[in-house]
Every structure is written in C-alpha cells, then in structure tokens.
Image (cartoon, rainbow, N blue to C red):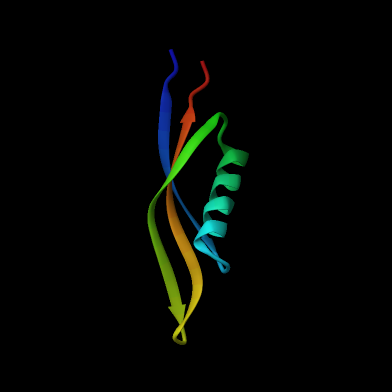
Length: 67
C-alpha cells in the first residue's frame, strides 16, 4: 500500500504559464522524492506599465511517501 501527500507550490515565469508550470515541477522534483503528478490550481499574471510582467501558477504536487 502506498501513501501519497499533496503539497501546494507557486512558480512564476516571464515567458508563459506553461514555462511556469515546467519550472515549478522541475524544482519540486529536485526537493521532493517520488513526484507522481501535478495539477494547476490557479493561474495569475502580474502587470507592470500595462503589460504582462510575469505568469504565475499555483500547483498541487502529488508525491508518494517513502516506506
């Protein structure tokens, strides 16, 4: 039997939501073991001088706990 945990992280990118998602998952995999999935809970943009300055995603990362 496996037991999983879900943790929430926020990642940002100056390029796109997709890039922010990839960066967040990449970083989570460097810190957490056994990452199995992720889902995007929320997306936001920051605006500066009338233009998008960054894309931000809130990710729910699922990972399996070690025995």
